Amino acid sequence: MVFGKKAATVGLDIGSSHIKMVEIQKTGKGFSLSNYGMVPLLPEAIVEGEIMDRTLVIDTIKNLFETRKIKSNEVVSSVSGRGVIVKRITMDKLKEQEARERIKWEAEQHVPFDISDVTLDFQILNPDLGNNQMEVLLVAAKNETVNAQLDLLSGAGLNPVAMDYGAFAVQNAYEANYDVPAEEIVALVHIGADSTNINFVKAGVPYFTRDLPIAGNACLQLIQKNLGISYDQASELIRGEAVSDVSSDSSASVFNSFAEDFASSIERTLSFLAMSGGGERMSRVVMSGGGALIPSLHDHLKERFGIPVEIANPLQKITYDPGLFGSSGTDKLAPILMLAVGLGLREVK
Ligand SMILES: Nc1ncnc2c1ncn2[C@@H]1O[C@H](COP(=O)(O)OP(=O)(O)OP(=O)(O)O)[C@@H](O)[C@H]1O
Ligand SMILES: [Mg+2]
Image (cartoon, rainbow, N blue to C red; front, side):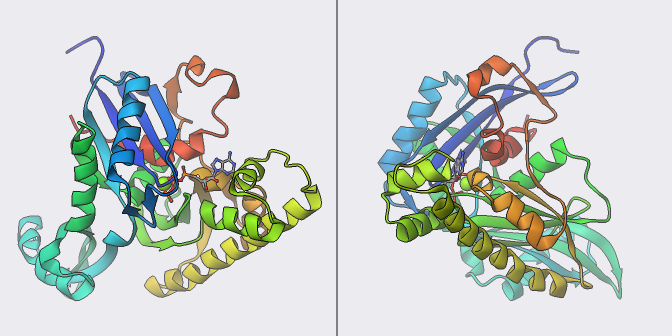
């Protein structure tokens, strides 16, 4: 048995508004967070998932690793958005190795991308559906999307030891911190700046996942438009700070209006959920990402859907030195670190 400090895993979440990093160590009793960092990225650097200013993103990552004194250059990172497709499919019952050879042909029928331009992965969910069929979770990522991410990492001098799908990292963080109900469908709603990913999970299996274009930026735009204030003022308001000449009534009304639009977007995905298998119903919502902190969103979703809604704390079962976070604590930070924590928890060694 080897005693002493074990190697840590660094999870890196390159978001369009903030780059987040966590360093997680496996201890005898579980996991421990040894370092973290978060830096804002200028809004023009990554737009709608596209990297517009590669140098700026690379410099921001390098800066983050330098200021947080991260020694290791090995990271676990992720891809998400339109370049990745996840689907549960039914195919002929095969052994893992045979399925691996066949998956490309199966994927052709299910993936709207040119199969020669994608990286495929799969997991057998149910090896025996009857009729000589099995159920498989298919993941297809456009090579272009994966390569753009690899290019950023190598530009920043980092070595990706694993590349995950963002929604799976969120799910990983959730499962590591919560007792997962066996029968319920939990909606993991990860709300970023540019987009929201909703992943309906049942007993650890992603049932159905979708990206919605409504998130923090849409809220900021609505605030600016409805209240006639600047982007900076809207950013203050969204963080719950008072802005001169904006009454609490008018800010409450704009947050209410955003929450209504957001809830309606989620509602529309529910019909796909119902179609995707035997009339399944969402029974719990777990929110994460910076957008989970948007005022009144949590309360509104709870009221609209009449089910438990919570804001995730991915550090719930992870030990850390509270001094790491200073006096501000983790309440407004932990949900933003959700995806990065899910990546940092991957055991790659
Ligand atoms: N304390 C807060 N209160 C309310 N909203 C917040 C708070 N902190 C961040 N946000 C909002 O959350 C969004 C950023 O969240 P996050 O860092 O998860 O996004 P991202 O990962 O950069 O974006 P994306 O995943 O879409 O590329 C911003 O739009 C911001 O306005
Ligand atoms: Mg994000």
